[in-house]
Amino acid sequence: MLLVSACLLGVDCKYNGENNLNSKVLELLSKETLIPVCPEQLGGCPTPRVPSEIVDGDGADVLDGKARVMTKNGEDVTEYFIRGAREVLKIAQSMGIEKAIMKARSPSCGFCSIYDGTFSGKTKSGNGVTTEILKRNGISVLTEEDV
Image (cartoon, rainbow, N blue to C red; front, side, top):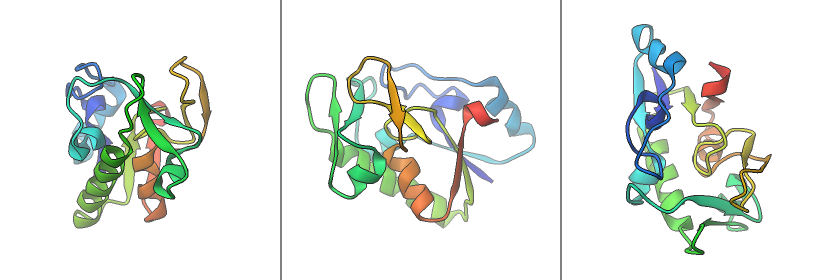
């Protein structure tokens, strides 16, 4: 059983109301039970929504109170991202999930690389908020690019 970013399975939960359907992830449905989650929606963010990025840090810094998640319009949405991460963790723990496939570069789901907080498409090292909380709790993470 694998936890998967819902957008990768074709769920229209992306910030712009669309999805990131990935054929390789979709193919896994024939071999694995996939549990779709969208941390932003679980945290209370609407769909569609203004794009968000982590400013002055990464997911670890957000969880430690040292960085914020901000929308492109300057609204602080940190609480939504932390709440969503905690909800995803609850789902993973209640189902005994040990591995997750998360959306690359996302401020929630990115693994090892996330957008840099300038809304320019540039990236920086670090994990998204949800990926960080999963890793801190012993769940291994990869992205659709690793499938």
